[in-house]
Image 1 (cartoon, helix red, strand yellow):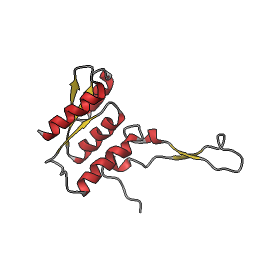
Image 2 (cartoon, rainbow, N blue to C red):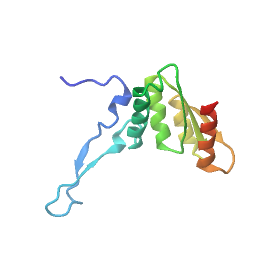
Image 3 (cartoon, rainbow, N blue to C red):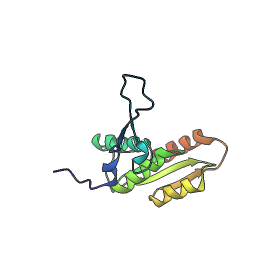
Image 4 (cartoon, helix red, strand yellow):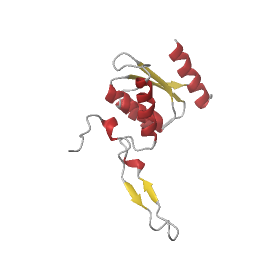
Length: 136
């Protein structure tokens, strides 16, 4: 009997594979994974799950007790937001100024606390802000 997933994170990576017959040279079978079918719509969903599961396995984080802090400008943040929501982690995301309101809204809908770095430092400033928050 097939295992029924109990968490949205369990669906990450269970994306369909498609044979790309029109793109393959003669005598070659070429396949692609449709990563947009991941729950967050991106291959970065795999990274989000892997980051959290590795930290759990190493005993670095625990659901309900740990807060994850990450700088992001895109799909990794979305992945972390839904994985943290599913597993019971608080998440603080540092976004560089200029990110779309839609992306910010989606992150908040998943339950992430979003902090915007307000100057022109871009992603570097977001990383610095995340480090400063994480180290207290």
